[in-house]
Image (cartoon, rainbow, N blue to C red):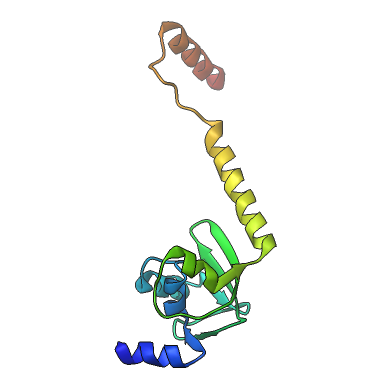
Length: 138
């Protein structure tokens, strides 16, 4: 393990799964590798392999949950540090950030549309519910 870190420190590239972990896109390298294997990470518009060497200037598209990130690699690292350091490893494109925020707002609006009742329906409400059910039968 120590020799891998020394090699990565001396070279200008690092494995893709290791970089995704160091940049804090995934909590573990195993999750990063699983995302790569299932096609959720693209390098230069193509599916990537976990052993793919990431270099400064590479363009990556990462799907994490419902969010899509389009990032440019600014630095390589094989160690996981604080979030402030990890954010310095990449730059997200402006249109990617806008799309992601718009999708998040849409999902929040969809969730806000339905609100379950706070209490059980009273006698009048139960009659209305029953009447609505009868409308479908005719």
